Image (tube, rainbow, N blue to C red; front, side, top):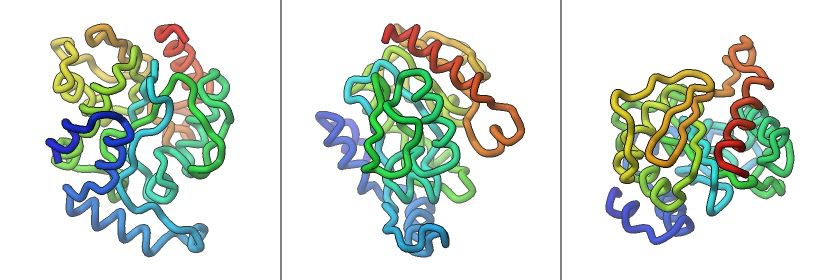
Length: 232
């Protein structure tokens, strides 16, 4: 699997190869079972049920790094953050900040388009309870490493502490100088990695948005800052 990721010549080939990955038995079993059983609200839909590749601009100035697809979001629609509550908040903010052409993303053919921006996940398969294991995170790392090598964004916006922890060894493996000691995660925290800037952002999960830990203003401030740093 690592060799397949490393030898992908471009993003379309990388996306195709990762979309058939079966490296983690627990994740394969879960994503496929969810796709068969389905949530009642989506019982008439055909689920993607496979690893979910990154999507957005092919030459992004800004790369958004999330945790993993939601079982009935990306695992259903085949597009990360599409069709779930976290995505409702995320794309509304990206639209307000001029990084998405519309304020929502509900399915893969809905006309949504990201501007100067690409979205990826550190783990490409939906995990049970939204909690991938450290071993699953590490097994999935080659896909993120190659995506970093192919895109070389100027700014990375990292959604949540899990993705923050997963990013630094991926950057190092992609040949990007990383700071020592590793910067601590926090909302709106900034760190340099070579010529890239890494921005921390609380994940727009239901738990965070319902409790007010994340607000629209907080998300907008991070994405406006990302635009400024990226020069777009």
